[in-house]
Amino acid sequence: MTATPMPSLMPTYARTDIAFDRGEGAYLFDGAGRRYLDFAAGIAVDSLGHCHPHLVEKLTEQVGKLWHVSNLFRIPGQERLAERLVANTFADSVFFNNSGAEAMETGFKMMRRFHSDNGAPERYRVICCNGAFHGRTLATIAAGGQEKHLAGFGPAVDGFDHVAFGNLNEMRAAITPETAGILVEPVQGEGGIRPAPEGYLKGLRDVADEFGLLLMFDEVQCGAGRTGKLFAHEWSDATPDIMAVAKGLGSGFPLGASLAVEKVASVMVAGSHGTTFGGNPLAMAAANAVLDVMLADGFMDSVTRVANYMAQAMQALVTDFPDLLDEYRGQGLMVGLKCAEDGQNAALNTRLTDLGMLTALAGDNVLRMVPPLIITEAHVDEAMVMLRQACQSVQDGQ
Ligand SMILES: *Cc1c(COP(=O)(O)O)cnc(C)c1O
Image (cartoon, rainbow, N blue to C red; front, side):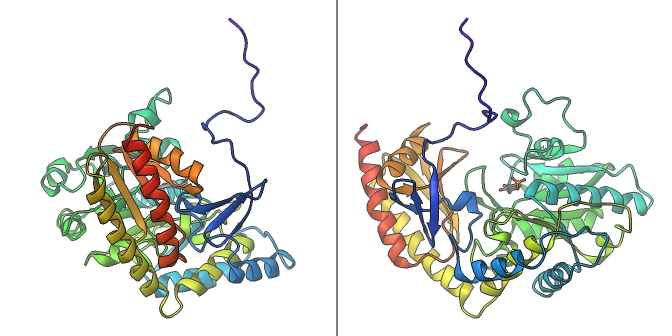
């Protein structure tokens, strides 16, 4: 056996051999100055595109003032961001973390503690959905329930049950005296860009209320304006008790948030939970700047207008390449093209990169597009030219 040298960077990713040098709006540029239309946005993270002038201004201002202090002191940026999130959502209170998985973990801890404080510590199990993705920590891989993420990392954290996404009967049947709550992504992201069926979220709300369970939404990917509302569940008439947010909230600055209604948030007291980095002044400056833009009049209308334009273009593509593309799925600027055969999504992704457009993959053979929310119809037109070329070449087997 010849020993392959161990790379100094742990090889957890099969990386494309491109290193980007700078970004501007919906475009990235590599070291040689080649331009790419970025419809991956760092996996739904760069919600306002690259180097948005307002974010650059606000972060630069903060960089020269104060980066980090511990949560043992008041952090005015946190208070402001929390107030704004509370004012614009179902939530009464917010905890800030550094990532999506951590925002999820905080949610799980709140669920358990809520029932424990209410005299039912035996209620600790969470019913999750097949095809879900909730992160890569031990608890979140157990919640996601995907074999490929759990393999070799056993024993799996106890307390997560799984039912079919979209099936209310299965959900009801899975409830036991040990159930603490229900967890769902209003639009499944990694699982293949699958919006919850009409009426499902409201149905879950009713089930949760009937059985005294907490309802938690994972809006790490579909939240922060991605669907044309600040949070995706606003398209339904259901609100959760707990919600995890991250990805687009910092538009590239790592940050997560766990939102909760009063009866849940009130079980978290001094000492029950903590974080060293979560909610530091730099992160708060980034997220407050993101909200300045997203909450401005007309922003979400523009996301919806472009999203509708893109949905029509995607439908047309599916019509024109019926052997390659099974369907268009999506909500807002969370867009998926389901390919007919295994691996065609990856082939399209590679072809598009060669052509100068970045996309991502998702489960269920889906090519995923989660562009910055600042794109216009002209960016969609530009994307369509490359998408048509890529579809033609994959369909022709080239
Ligand atoms: C990305 C993602 C997570 C995990 O977020 P990290 O910041 O990678 O920990 C959780 N849930 C959903 C729906 C996601 O898309």
